[in-house]
Amino acid sequence: MQIIRDITTLRRAVSALQQGGKSVALVPTMGALHDGHLSLVRMAKRVADHVVVSIFVNPTQFGPNEDFEAYPRDEARDAALLADEGVALLWSPDVTTMYPAGHSTHIEVAELGSDYCGAARPGHFDGVATVVAKLFNQVRADVAIFGEKDWQQLAIIRRMARDLDFKLDILGAPIARDADGLALSSRNAYLSEKQRASATAFPDALKDAVAAIAGGADVAQTLTAAERAIVAGGFDSVDYVALADADSLERLAEFHTPARLLAAARIGRTRLIDNYPVG
Ligand code: PAF
Image 1 (tube, helix red, strand yellow):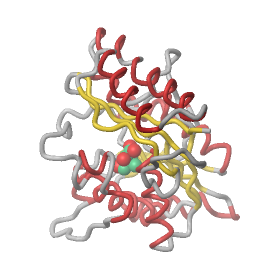
Image 2 (cartoon, protein in one colour):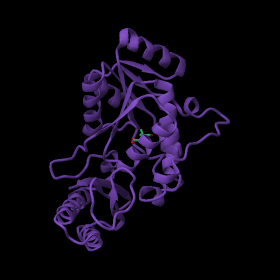
Image 3 (cartoon, protein in one colour):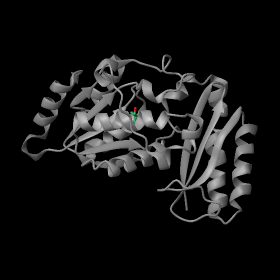
């Protein structure tokens, strides 16, 4: 596996991979890889001839009081995992390659970015949309794969790609979960043993809410019951539990398909997100 850190070499290497009409899939990550990321890589291998993974801990998507400095980084470990998966190329730029001095352009996907995680993390999705647009332009892959765990992020990236006429296909990969249902996340590493044991209350409450809503229960009451169950299960607070249109992300007071239950909650200093399809 090649590890590349400058854009000229990257472009040359990706063009070489695409020789003879071969396709390239991009899996953007911030490293600290876990089985969830590897499931994206395996999906990428199924849909394309070659896989490029990017690792870049993107400062512009972290708020001032968030965990940018503390975010887990271990490129050697991540690279070994990716090489074992048969990844062709690791794109690992440093901050000055991604954001040269004077960088002053950013992308805002206004309609989808202000609610849910966008409300709790102002500017976060502008940082995501900007870096993902740059990654698309840098790598020029044929397809890009994102996890469905960040459902709002996926919707924003799809909209950004459509609005800005990016040529590549964007695929969502199903959420990878531990055996007890907790969605895999790099941030699970922050949980103490006790918090990890309690964290299963989060997917449990969401699954109960999904079953209730699909069975015709009142949406507002069900969302409130889910929030209470999450806190009763050991979480400190709930940022939101919402029923949303799966594509527009508009909040739904009444159930219709396609719908998605979206949620974020805090346990200690860790903020977890999750979502499920409804119906
Ligand atoms: O989902 C992530 O890991 C990041 O938000 C992404 C898409 C790699 C952009 O930095």
